[in-house]
Image (cartoon, rainbow, N blue to C red; front, side, top):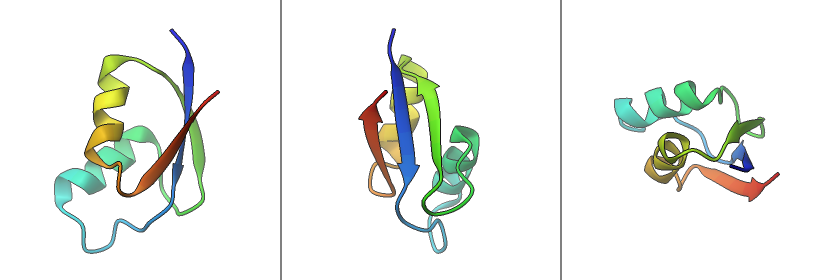
Length: 59
C-alpha cells in the first residue's frame, strides 16, 4: 500500500458542509497545505469527494 500526497488548491468557502468536513478529516486547513496519507480505499474515496479542491501525487 503506497503513500499519497494531497495538496489543497482551492478554498472551502461557499462549499457544501460535507466537503468542508471531508477536507478537515483529511487534515487540510489552508490553501497550499500538503498532507501525506496511506492510499487506502477510505482515503481515496474522501479525495474523490473533493477532487475539484485538491491535487494529488504519489509519494
